[in-house]
Structure formats: C-alpha cells, structure tokens
Image (cartoon, rainbow, N blue to C red; front, top):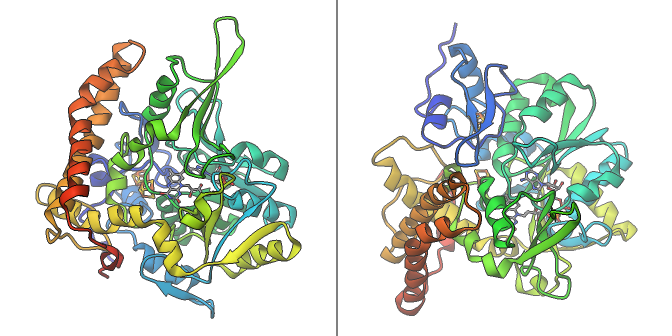
Length: 465
Ligand SMILES: Cc1cc2nc3c(=O)[nH]c(=O)nc-3n(C[C@H](O)[C@H](O)[C@H](O)COP(=O)(O)OP(=O)(O)OC[C@H]3O[C@@H](n4cnc5c(N)ncnc54)[C@H](O)[C@@H]3O)c2cc1C
Ligand code: SF4
Ligand code: SF4
C-alpha cells in the first residue's frame, strides 16, 4: 500500500497554530471533528477525538493544510478543459470579466445583488433544487450561519455580506442527508475546501453543482458584531442586524451597520452607526482570525464565479451598489449573458486591470504583505505553504505597517475578550487597551503619507509558483 506522506503543516498544526478558519470541511468527514466557538469569538475545529486515518483523510480538504493542492492546481483541474479559459496571475483562471447589477436584488445585496440574482435564476431555471446561503440562525452561539433556501423569494433575507464566522459543518451534513442539486455561496477558503472535498467525496460532488464565490479581504470574529452593537450605544445583543445597510443617496462605500433591539417595553428599536465612523477598523484588521493573514486567494479562484464590490471611481459614486464579476464556468457565464439579454441585469465587460485595481488593498496585504508575514512568523513557528515565498526584501515602511497591523489584530482579540468577560457595558475597557496601538497606527500612517516615497506594489501581486 502506498504510504501517505505526512505534511509539514497538517490539520493538528493548523488548529494548534491558530490557522483554522472553521470551514467545517473536516467535520463533514468525521463525526469526531466538531466546530465550536472559542473564547475569541472565532469558530474553530476540535479534532482531539479523531484517529490517524481520519486525520489523513481530512488533511487533503483543509484549506490551510500543506497536504491540500493549492488554488491554482484546483482551478486548473476544475476549469482548465474549457476552450475559452484564460489565466490571470492575480485573478486566477477566468472566462469573462464584468461590472453590473440587478435592479431587483441590489437593494438587498452587498453591492450589485449579482450573487442573489444568480442563485434565484438557478432555482427558477431548475439548474438546482436548493441554494446554500448565509442568514440569521436560531442558534445562540451562531447569530448567523449557512442556511438552505429552495424558493427565490426567500433570498432577499440572505443578501448582503455577513462579517461573521460561519461554518459549512451543518449544511454539509444536510447535503449528505438530503439528495438534491445544490449551489453554495462562500468566501475563497471555503470554496477551496469544498472543491477538494468534492474531489474526494463523490456524494458531495454529485450534489453540489455550483460554487458562487464572494471576494474576501478578511473574516471577522463574532466580537465584531458585539463591537458594532456597542458602537450604536446598546449593550444587549440585537434581534436582527445588517452589516451593510446602503445609503442610496451617498457613495457605495459609505454604508451603515444597522441593528434592531428590543427595548425594556418589548418594542423594536433600530439603531445604526456609519461605516466611516468605524471604517478604519476594516483596514486595521480588528477581530480578524489569524488564518486571514496567511491567505493568498483574493478572488475565490476555485469557485465557478467570483463577485466583489466595484471599488473603482466610476462605480463607487453610485450608492445603490455595483458588483464586479469574474466567471470561470461557461454555464454561469451563459446565465449572466442571458440576464443581460433579457434586461434583468445591467452588465458591461471590464478589463483584468479593472478587477485588480478594485482589490489593490487586498492584494497589497495578501500577496505582498503575506511574503513578509511568512518570513517573520516562519522564523519561530510553522506557517502554511503558500503560492508566494517568504521574503524580507520589502521597504521599511511597508514592514513596519505589517508589524503594527499584526499587533492590532492580536491586541483587539484580547481587549474585546476582557471587555466582554468583565460583564460591563460599553467599550471602556476595550478602548483603553487599544488606545496606544491605534494611536501608533494613525501616527505612523500620517508619517508614511508625508515621508515615504510613493510605491506601486502591483508587480509583486503575482504568484511565485
Ligand atoms: C467576510 C467578507 C469579506 C469581504 N471582503 C471583501 C473585499 O475585500 N472586497 C470586496 O470587493 N468585497 C468584499 N466582500 C463583499 C463581497 O464581495 C460581496 O458579498 C459581493 O460583492 C457580492 O455582492 P452582491 O451584491 O453581488 O451579492 P449579494 O446579493 O449581496 O449576495 C451575497 C451572497 O453571499 C452570501 N454571503 C454573505 N456573507 C457570507 C459569508 N460570510 N460566507 C458565505 N456566504 C456569505 C449571502 O448569503 C448572499 O447569498 C466581503 C464579504 C464578506 C462576507
Ligand atoms: S478543515 Fe476547516 S475547520 Fe477543519 S481544521 Fe481545516 S480550516 Fe479548520
Ligand atoms: S481572508 Fe482568506 S482565510 Fe480569511 S476568510 Fe477570507 S478567504 Fe478565508
């Protein structure tokens, strides 16, 4: 029998070193693996009860294990046979690139409502029986989670972006237990896990027919929901929440966190806080799981389609929202083209450069910054094998910024845990612990803008393998 080679970073090390993103692919393969919320509000795997043969099987479908093929290999295997396929170093393989929106779904969507429109079309055209999306769950431990929807009219409740830890564990069990044809939404690392799971599990491959990817710059722990809630002035958990309520009279990047609370008389009260009041937290990486600092797939390269916000000057002025789209499967591209023909979608083609430009910040962090983080953290402890190589050859300004961001990420987890554990309302403890590191970041950013030579890191967005 062929001996399986032990990977340098296998599932036990992924979990031990904090690289687990809680995707749930391992839990779908063994009842001994479970996904639980840790004390930092992150979903992580518990694999203590798994035996060696289970671990070896799970290793190949864990997005952070060295035993898994990388995104380029998976995408080429999935889409490489299509005659019109092209390969982009940054966006991955693709057949078409678009900008657009659905008039019907954009009001509920994060950007142009393209993902929800596409899923509704798949249901209406009978391409799938059910779609797996994210929405509010009844579980106290998971405010939001994946859910199964079989009617297009129910999709409005699951449009928009959920900056909240979710897991495939329960819905994959649903897929295993319930025959049917499914389409699934997810962030890039979840699609990587699913693609590899399908390669090793014929039942899941037969049932999950389409993977709709949403571009992802970072995930947030459940602390983000606590933090935003408290920013609206409430200490109690909301009964409903939306991370991206649009203000159609403003710009697309000027959105609100909006939550509904029950007041002392049982009456619903809606409160909100504007993105620009908390916006800096996004770039600084507050409450971000460690895995996201070791991820090089910005464009959901293994999904049949990848959809993102159109962060380009010509679209961002429109507060109703516009999506950019990368298609990889001809079936979904045809669906989009048919939507354009029928007038249900407003769609125009864009260039590869447009797509790259719109995600410049994410590529700076996840391709260029990643090289430095691999170098830095890899000196002490094992780090995942990525498609870019560790490097210390970056300018000093860039390196200092990476170090401060990393400190903010780590500190925010500890500070919010202390705040919540204290039982005190508000954010006083959190803010007092974060004060110095956030001031340092702001001071450094101003200094860098004033003194550092302007650099274009685009040539370094490319892969090393
Ligand atoms: C964690 C996270 C990080 C993001 N980072 C970026 C970024 O860096 N750059 C960028 O351009 N855009 C980012 N987005 C936004 C994302 O690209 C948009 O969801 C996308 O533009 C689709 O918009 P839409 O209006 O076409 O889709 P919609 O019609 O809003 O549909 C979105 C679909 O995605 C599902 N979904 C939402 N959140 C999740 C989740 N956490 N896991 C799985 N499925 C989910 C919804 O249930 C819905 O079915 C991020 C979203 C998330 C959740
Ligand atoms: S498969 Fe997913 S949930 Fe399991 S250890 Fe890997 S990242 Fe974590
Ligand atoms: S940044 Fe990467 S690792 Fe983090 S959730 Fe998004 S795709 Fe997954």
